[in-house]
Each structure stands twice: as structure tokens, then as C-alpha cells.
Image (cartoon, rainbow, N blue to C red; front, side, top):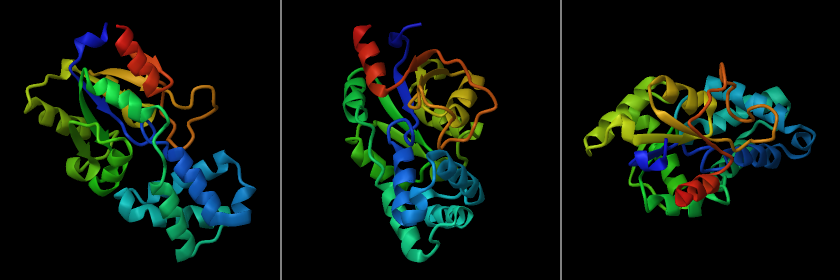
Length: 232
């Protein structure tokens, strides 16, 4: 299998292109003050994930509530000011250092499509940070079902089919084994795992998958993916 087999790269955004874990950690520590400084990354991620389960809606609408739910569990300030502080840091999460350049290089050879569980408002913020590299994008509020629901992938496939692209011409690129890699493989897609947490224990701010799916391509960054494409 070679990259020339594909015409479309579909991308997870949050965690693959945008360093949302930094946004989570910075947000909790800024909003939580001295009490948050005593917490480990894993303690923050565990409370964040539990609270996010209770508020599964559009990120731009529920992220203050996610903080407040987690803050009560962790014993952190749980008032409107703290929630607003967390919200600013969360959505201020930066692009990974390699993302902008890698996407720019990959755009020369492929149609780039964003597939994100963020709603359109939140995704627009991310796309701007990434240099607006995408030819097309699908957000959770448009697809109506967030990943890992297979209907998200069906929605995108129908959309790309309208532009003349077939499933076997699509390579799905993502960090999350839970949201993306496992379900995409089950649906018959070729997959490229960007293991942003390579060398770290656990799954950080992402839910633990039932199993780790072996990908067709495996890199630790988008920069490595772009380098491999250019070498080919």
C-alpha cells in the first residue's frame, strides 16, 4: 500500500491537529488555582472525561458545564468566573507545532477533509489556527451523530461521493483509537494513526478504546506523515 492509492485524506481535528489536552490541563490549572496545582494530569483527565460524558452536547455550548462538573469532583473553584476562565483556555488550545506546515504540504497532493466532533462554531476557531487548509469539513452538529457513531462516517462518505470520491480513495488520519481508528477500520477504511501520546502511559484526555487497532500507517506526528508522503 502506498499513499498514491489515495485521493482524499480525512482528518480528526481535536487531538490530531489541535493540542486539546494542553487546553484541558491549562484550563483546569488556571481556573482551579492552588488546588489544581496539586493535581496530576491523569487526575484532571479522569474528571474531565467523566464530566464530558454527562454533557455530550456541542463543545461551544457545554464546556463551561463540563468544567463545573469536574471541578466539584476535584474540589476546585466551581463558580461562573472559574468556568469562564476554563472556557477561554480550553478553546485557546494551540495547534501542534507541526500541524500547519504538514497540512500545507499534504494539501499539495490530496483533498483534505476535516471530520470533527466539534460543532461548526468551535471548528471554525480550529480551522483558523491551522491556516484554513481544508477543502471540505464535516462537524458533529451537521452529521447529527458524533464519532465513533458509524453514521458520522456515512454522512461524510455521502458528501465526498457527491464530489466523485470513492471510499477506497480515502485515508482516515486520526489520533483517537476510540473515536476514529477502530470504527474507521471496522467500516472498511484504510487508517493512519497519529500517535500524539507516543511514549506516554494511558490515553490522556481521550476515552480508553476496547482494543488498540493496528493501523495501515503509523506516525507520531502529522509532520512525519507529510515527510513520508514526500519521500514516496
